[in-house]
Length: 205
Image (cartoon, rainbow, N blue to C red; front, side):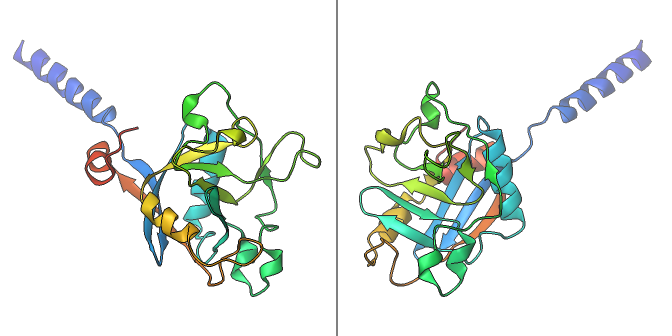
């Protein structure tokens, strides 16, 4: 009987280890004005996987927030923003698009304060509303930008550091809403447990 109990106890321990929760992926966006931390929605798996893949290869590092519109969004992630030609900012990317993952029924995937959405070409040339392969924007107004709902894919949200976004959008800009002084980013992937997420970001997915 004792041998049987020992075997059963051993199996239970192994089963417990097998289902132990793994860490979650958090995106850290470092800037000269401070850091922002982004949660990528698992409900938009194509966009999530793409952003993680690009971040893992340092694709976003030294790109800038090249479009900062007061009371609207800050936008970045264009590799063209690394060069000295400001006129090509907003037209670059990794050479592919991402199929739209737009939702009109999931309230999480709407343009609320701090939402992270994917930029894209307009409907005339992009009727399926496929997303840019790398360019993204962060919603600035506390009331959100509900006029964008149903038109662009929301694939994440800033869970800490919206004060940084608010500072970035206030920087001096030219007539095209491009900051006069480059606002560069360095993007990293952090592994965090649920307990760490709650403690550090006051966020539980």
